[in-house]
Length: 175
Image (cartoon, rainbow, N blue to C red):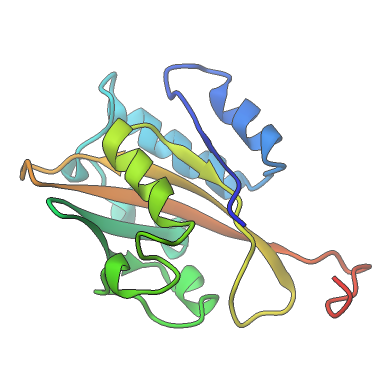
């Protein structure tokens, strides 16, 4: 199940309030949001050309997903999946369109979150249940952020990801 909260980047308290509402604690999410927010420079969102994670935030690069957004017909494609994220997913998604993936297609719980960000241009905090190969992970913390591109029928989204591990006193079988 995906828990999510859309946040107003112009409200100085929105990120902290949204993270508290979802019981999120990852400093990576805060750092990613702050990077994106600084790149906005007073605009609704930064352009893809404004960000350079390789040079500017290399320590966050393994925690990034870049997504292409096609507006007509609406669809999303994995452009880049950072190494830390990729090693904790069940497969490599680079180059794949959401519409062709059962867990990501329009009937999934993931698609509507990306659609909201694409339509409204506001960041989305998410804390979905982890589904993947590692039994010690129970959830994902991420922030989904919009980016503009020159093509009017396209956009991009950048996500900063962290994984929530099961507490040592929790039984992975009993949950």
